[in-house]
Length: 142
Ligand SMILES: CC(C)(COP(=O)(O)OP(=O)(O)OC[C@H]1O[C@@H](n2cnc3c(N)ncnc32)[C@H](O)[C@@H]1OP(=O)(O)O)[C@@H](O)C(=O)NCCC(=O)NCCS
Image 1 (cartoon, protein in one colour):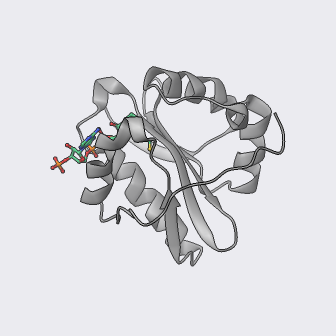
Image 2 (image 1 turned 45 degrees about the vertical axis):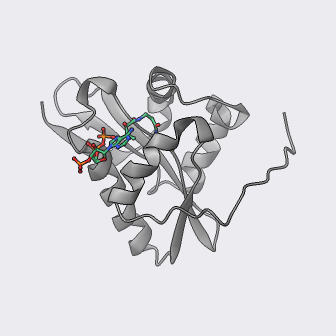
């Protein structure tokens, strides 16, 4: 099978949500359809999917967002049947290229403690594991 990367469109959202569920990414308020539409509209070049060229099914997805200072990466997922074939790396490389095109200086992402094995994947891509930081959040809307 051959795969290509393209920008995420609104019509992809249900399949992307299914993919996230399949790989056990917890979906929150921010992953509701209307919220994802907002994200895509705000960052059209940074939210991308991996699709096969024949059936045009979604096999991978990742959300990138630029807040004016940092680039943020959320919910990278590769369909389990094709994991381990460097498609995760392929999607991250493409996202790096797109962030670079926007002159973004630094990228950040968060890893849940129950998914900490994934840190090795990011380290192989050159990410630094910051152990001097902890995360805080505040919910404005539920
Ligand atoms: C993380 C994920 C996107 C990686 O995609 P992938 O296509 O399987 O990864 P790649 O084939 O590009 O892997 C690149 C390297 O990272 C390693 N790696 C991949 N997943 C790993 C994991 N879960 N733990 C440790 N190492 C991992 C690979 O073994 C490979 O190592 P190598 O270069 O020495 O051969 C995929 O496993 C996935 O969708 N996981 C579930 C969702 C998830 O947890 N997302 C991250 C949210 S923070």
